[in-house]
Every structure is written in C-alpha cells, then in structure tokens.
Image (cartoon, rainbow, N blue to C red):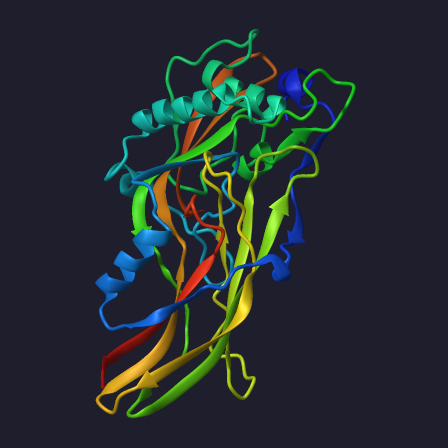
Length: 323
C-alpha cells in the first residue's frame, strides 16, 4: 500500500476475517410446513418472511460475490452492469450509503470515519476529476500500488496507539436487484405414490473481524440427509454479505425433519431457497497514492445479500410437480 495511505489511517494493518461457526443450538428451524406446486407461490411465501429490497448496499469488501462451483469469482462485465445501473450513479449512491452509515451513532466510530473517507476523501488528498470505471470484476487493482480490491478493502488499522485505530479502507458495494431467493440445494425427485422423508439443516461460517471491522458475511452450507442417513446431492454452499443497514446475524438452522406425501400422479422433492437475493452493481472504493492523489474506483460485481429481516439462511420447501 502506498506510504501516504498507510501513514494516514492503516498503520499496523491486518486482513479482516477469521472463520467462526454460529451456534447450532441457538438456530431456528427453516422448513415450511406447506406443500407447493408453483414457483410463484414459493416466491410469494418467501416475500412474506424474507423481504428483499430493490437496491442494496454492503459496507466493505462483499463476501457474497457470485462464484462458480469451484469457488472462483464470476466476472461481471461493465456492459452487463450498465444495463441496469449506471456506474456514475452507483458512485453517488455508494457515497450516500456511506453518509447514512456515518450518520448512525450506533455504528462504531472508527468505521463511521472510514465511511466518511469514501464520501469526502482525505484532508491532504487531491480530489479526482473523473471516476475510474473498471471493465469487469477481475479488473480491480487499486491505483496506489498493486493491491487487489479484496486486499485493499480487507485491511484494518490494528495499532491501538494510532489515531486511526480500527479504521478500514473506504469501500462500499451498491447493487440493483437481480435474482431473488435462488435455489440452493434440492433432493432427488420421486414419482408416484409414496412418502419422502429427510432431515435438513444449514450451517453458517461467519467471517468475524479481528477488531471492529465491517460485518463482512461468510459461507452458508445447506444439507439434506435421507432417512437412511445418506447425504443427498452435491454440496450447495454459497457465500453471503450483510446489508449495510442490517442488524440481524445469520444463524445455523436446527436439523429438522421434513416429510412429503407424493400422490400417484405427481413427482415430489425437497427444495432449498436462499433467504436473500443477488444484486448486480459495483464495488466502489476511494484510494490515495504516495503523491496524495485520490482515485474513486467502481468495479462491476454481482453479490448475494442476506435478507435484512431474517436470521435464517435457507428455507426448505416441499414441492410437487406433474409426474
């Protein structure tokens, strides 16, 4: 990191994050008691207890970046992001989200100051005349000297004697609603008359800051176990972020039994739906180099955000379709 930035607020930095599992015994159940045939009925049910917003913001580097089955980040192009969200407007929205965060006196003061840096920059910094709009998610090296956005945004001042103790790099994701309640885990379908019996759960590994860093998010792993104790299907893990306004924290769900009665003219299966949505937009960050030149960067990205009003990561639905 450039010397000016390090001297300003990140002396004694450390990467945020050490995985800590949530407590299963404190978790809620996540199985809907009804049986559904139509997808639209499932979505209506989800909207009642896990409403999502048409736009969302995430403070810091978003852990919920959309990834493939191998855990690699899927690159969103600028052309795709611009279809629903203008990057310059996104930068304005990110600054507004940062202002709202900074204005909330319930948030930790070091992070409020970090949010102010995104909006106002540094007192000694030369303000940029244009925005630095990147071409895709992987085009994310910050101007001040070689770090990726993840490395830059994941730094926090750990020196308790420094006036900027607890501050992080100023980064905010903003996005527009893309996909609500994606399917995350499903059992095999059974055709014809009979009963399907499963036990379901979802475990959460939450990324906790080693100081007071942003509530970053983490990883959710849904599981379906058949009556003969065999795990059904491939692991459908996914990462999540918290909305900047969320006060809830995701919990493990208790292992819960689910039974589906399948009529002879139907196919039955169990389906897991994530309690949140994907948003397409931009990771917006403000950087400063060794010459005190600031830059405001917008990197296209697609991020999964946990619904702010629920602590349950996944809801399981009993489904029927024509045989």
